[in-house]
Image 1 (cartoon, rainbow, N blue to C red):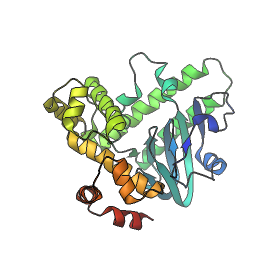
Image 2 (cartoon, rainbow, N blue to C red):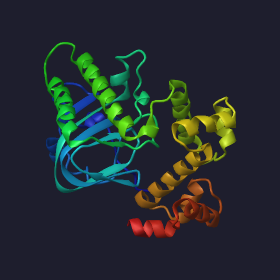
Image 3 (cartoon, one colour):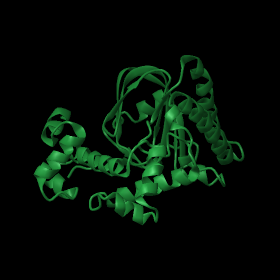
Image 4 (cartoon, rainbow, N blue to C red):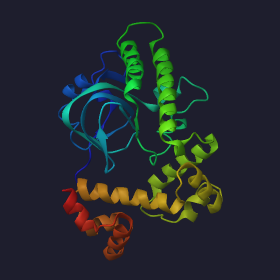
Length: 291
């Protein structure tokens, strides 16, 4: 079985002697990592990138987004993505571990920001052209601090990160009014549910199972998901199963029957029917079309 490469933050060149944080000019970063950015891969860290010039596409978990000036992308650990550019991109990029950010704050968590609190929220915000210079200056300040040799650098970087995430959240909420900041208790339940689904989706596809595991009623769990994502528990489970099905079809050598079995479907015909209902296309057609 082919495996999608998982990039570790320690693999990248760290001139600033920080193993859990990285920042660079985007053009330089892509040049240094030209061997893999155009191929599907994952990260074990959080990534944020601003495009000030360039065009192309960015595919994240089989969703395709246009790259253009003003795009800011956010990636969480585990997401599969790659880039394809039509014209030379320019901008800024940084990434970091969860611990780097959260160790510096008592009540601030990464999943409080709308672009990070669920895999289901769009991983992109398009800022207006007149806002690019302001956001770019924030990224530049992070980059300058990263390469500095000043005391309390880690604390300063964490503070700058928090500020840029707050400002980008405001842009995100302004452009995506349905993605408003919701209560932390709802976000905590949502995150716990997504982790549970990741661990159990191959064997457990019942909404009742996950509600009981979270010690809440199925009705209340659906209420939380309606508020945060405007989806039901069953939809969230199904979407996770379908995402893994697509990953296996594209990135593994398993047959469709083997993939069906891996995902907990003993009968391939049933799996094929479910896949077509959810995606409007059969597994065989999806695999052929994607290839």
